[in-house]
Amino acid sequence: MSAAEKKPRRGYRHVENRRLMAAVYTILRLSVLAVLVAQFFNRNFENVLLCLLTLVLFMLPSMFERRLRIDLPDTLEIIILLFIYAAEILGEIREFYIAFPYWDTMLHTLNGFLCAAIGFALVDILNRTERVVLRLSPFFMAVVAFCFSMTIGVIWEFFEFFMDMVFHLDMQKDTVLTAISSVALDPAGGNHPVAVQGIQDTVLVLADGTTMAMGLGGYLDIGIVDTMQDLLVNFIGAVVFSTIGFFFVKSRGKGRFARRFIPVTAELREEAVQEKHAQEQAEKEKTDT
Image (cartoon, rainbow, N blue to C red):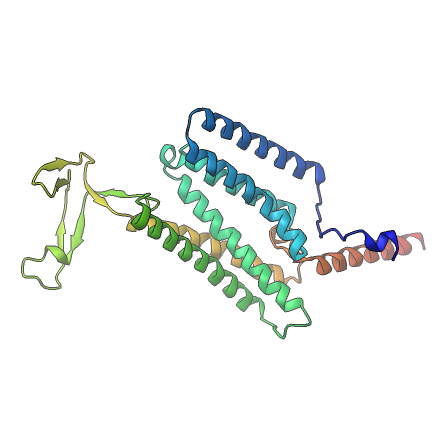
């Protein structure tokens, strides 16, 4: 056995712009390390664990590329990294979720967009694989991508609810309402909703009989409004990319924008490169003649 045969085969990893990707990885990792050190000296060890988790999550895109031999476009990979940083470091540790009311909404919208891209890529890869008998039309590919994105969004809301119920974390942020309507307020005990308008405060009566005014300026909704808003913006993100993916397939992959977000297998990537080289060579020969 030759030395070349004994040498372990490296996993697949394709990067269009190596300098840009190296700069993004370096800046984000150094930033996380700086936050980690600061949180350690401040004895915020829970945030230290979040920083370590973020560093681990940063390794997942390249690991998936190598292990699964899938080419993640540079644009998609950078957005995934920024999404992780925005959610864990800026959102949780720097408390952007509190400082900026629409921070969570922005991330859920982006999540719907990205998950639709991943779902679309999975179907596209199966459509092009000869070993799998699957030939979906562009419309059904878009539908599957949309459903995949919404499923991920629902599972995440399940996770938030579980963490709130078991560990009392309040991941499903509460909303202050000035009007409610509930059948629980029906004096006859029937199924007739009773509306209450102009709520200015909510008073809690504790088990020992003491009362506590919450001083929030209304009734405290426990998570349902936040959940519905998250699913709505996830829906919007999923619809946007599913529509883009539909026209991408209809145009036989000529759309440059969608290509920046759709992963492909290493084999399909190599075939595309070879086809591009062949076209360039044919054009060159045509020009020379």
